[in-house]
Image (cartoon, rainbow, N blue to C red; front, side):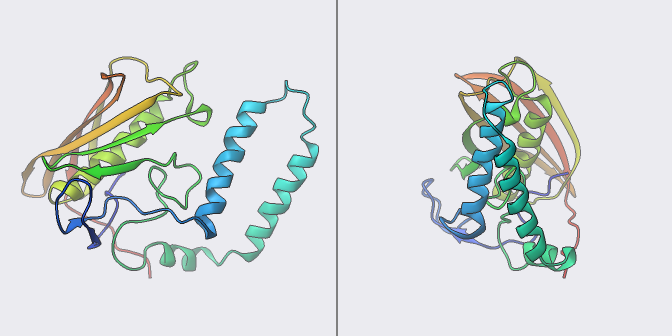
Length: 223
């Protein structure tokens, strides 16, 4: 259930759209710290899927190393409540969501840009971790990308809120290993009800389209 990239964010920038004092749409990744470690973890996930069990690789040592890393991280992690509070502190975009978050190894990550016409757009290429049908993107992954992107479009175009309904039409299989263009725009606001549309396209052809109904409401941040 998407609520865009922020709850009460007020971060701003002057982006490539030429729109001054524009709200930040995604977090900027860092070259060190958890962002760098997460980027390495994405490579590990993709590498394990690419290697599989048929390559003749001895994966016992790899498993031991990964277990050691996981044990080290778990031993030094703060308690859950403290970590959640840190994740949601301050104002502006989040860094942990599973679509654009540089702190989340599940995220491809997708980068989104606000356009002068009020829409948003991003490009991403998905690999084996996101496979559903052979050589193509899992339908649930498409839904995740569009739910989040529609939420960000609300933040860019007007009031934002939480997903109440998300209707998808799968027009053709969405390919892996090819650039995908993801677009969204807010189309109407009626009181607390926000309607937004979006699409995933490949090679100039729509693969998945979405219509969303959002409610202008947000959950409280942990503290």
